[in-house]
Image (cartoon, rainbow, N blue to C red; front, top):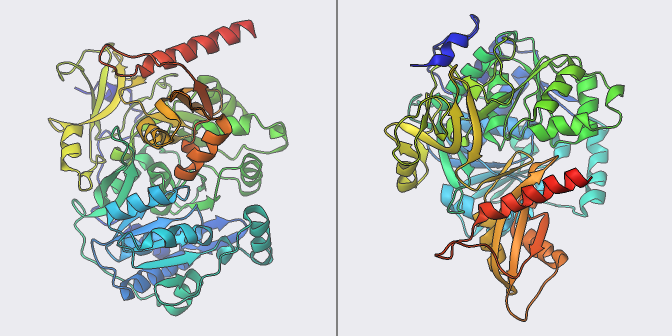
Length: 563
């Protein structure tokens, strides 16, 4: 029984047909159908579908010359730029598996992911080269392909950019094209655009290892097949039924190293022959200027992005009316943000829901139908089933009762890389357990009320307290620490560390901040520290994280009353 199907508008099929082809085949077809159409716009530089296709083949042939073959893992450590696009499809053409790597990772985090994935090649930004080079000998990495933002900038930006970069970062990285080091422009110049064919099993062969955190603190490699990714992009296209094939343009700010950005921009954009407007990072003013000039019609994003734009003092100077549809993910979307954004753009902004393990979308509100419910994550997508399971018995619960959200569907992962026990724990009778608590109403609309796990979502990033706690516990002055997400009007949540010092020892917020930044990506570093004599605990000594969060919420509510 799927009560939500009654609310589907006529334009959305209740079940879909999925083309049994590998992800990269869509780029081949886009290049045949729209050879001269702009595929990428990047800071003034444009590339046609034919150019992107041929560049991806050059990358594939070069990787093959380095010994990359079907099933090997190749990592990408890049912001959104043409090189990330070309590398992604180039890797897939060889039959290898993409390992998306967050450019913000520290050496420690990078080393773990490279070791775990067994990646043999990494394609990285020049500024990240020193970090990659340091961990190389500890991993299976055999080759590093290095690129710079300037490599795909138009003149004179390509000439000026290195000077700007040096001023901003204080770094100049010089890498020679020799031995195990390779330069992206040389790869493109030396390789050929010969078509590459690889026999792939649509149903079972992996396209992607996407790392996500976990309660153990160790990130897990989510195994996503070609079918998983194509099923989710196909469903996304069905949901966006008013969008016209080959005619839309999509704003690519969501990072490709996040599965949401990869599916909704990198795959859906190519599948439909859209113009993809890339921005390497989210900057409010740059984004407003880009929307004003480039006029994207689609803008998948995270709440922090929409909030940032709405709070810019000069927003009225920019024309945002080109935007027709936005699906917001990664964190809860405040109703007032939805309403204000729709008023300013004239387009539709709705909340969706998903996980890395589901490629990622499972639920969304309807964009154009009347049956959209504020505060709800919407209804399951075509061919996706969802249920609320009792936390004690594991049996399905009736409408209105809170339990764990569980899902089934063609977008659900194959499992966790090299972690059979974790995989087994995550599935129950064929259902993927999301770790999120919620309920379904009588109409089949779903609501998330809390997270079973203690994950923090700040600015769209998934942050796992255990990982931060383990780093802070290594500090010599710290006796006890617990990390929690506390409400933040901009980031959704922010990271707070509650600390008890060892007797006779102490530290300062500044010192702890510097310490944490050496070991953690910037978005994981606590923004707030609170020093205590003791932490609330159960009778068996387990720290009550929830009590700390509730205290914080009460304090904030009191401050708001007084303010």
